[in-house]
Length: 123
Image (cartoon, rainbow, N blue to C red; front, side, top):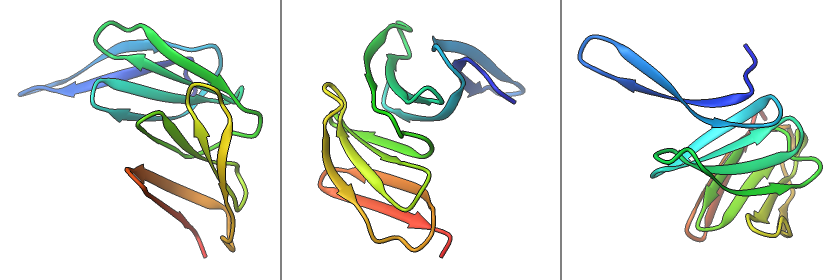
């Protein structure tokens, strides 16, 4: 299933409802939610944040190579490149603040909170 938007689902007593909270320019590869802010990573290497209440885009950054998993916290994005590296980017400028290397396999997930970055691969 491919989509060009981000949807928010909510579970009610007897049903689940969905509403479109963001429209983006390309296929969405990954989404993550922090409070009322949704971060979507698209196949066109753009990461966008949206306020899920107002449905307005807050920020967008393009960085060639962003491909798969993503996490964000306090203006920083951690994203995998589809290989063994993880970037930590400034959400406003797109500047790479750090590159994490050392995985033996392709990075499959990452999480970023405060000063801690956790990454994992299949190895």
